[in-house]
Amino acid sequence: MAGSMFESGSTPALLAVVLLVAMGIAHSYLGERYILIRLFKRDDLPKLFGGAAFTTGTLRFAWHLTTIAWWGLACLAYLAAGQTLDAAQTLRIIAVLALVSGIFPIVFTRGRHLSWIIFFAVAALLFASSAGAVPQ
Image (cartoon, rainbow, N blue to C red):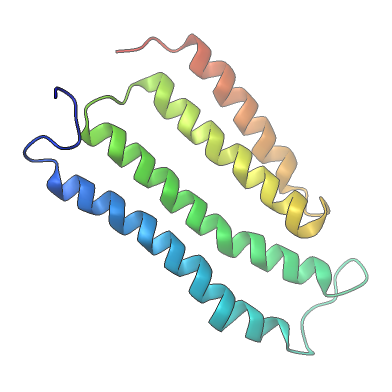
């Protein structure tokens, strides 16, 4: 199968993809269970915008954004190792990451953390750029 991840020599790349996905799952799950939940029980969290909800929401979306970034890297690595990655795909993958990254502050801070505006702008610009990118 030409361009397949399963060709000889792609085993290290496939292992890297699996590790990135597993790391993201572990990071989000273990971070929630052992770090964020304990942190949020503290009484001395900064109370921004009238309470601690904005602070906890911001910390939570920032924590899980790392997982999304690692999964995006896994997707890029998977396609690159299979020699099917082109400029348009790369731009679309980064655009999707920006789009998902923009959804997080809307969900976790009810839109009060304004990073969603920048993330959505980046997503729109990259989607537009990918439409004009020439496949290799």
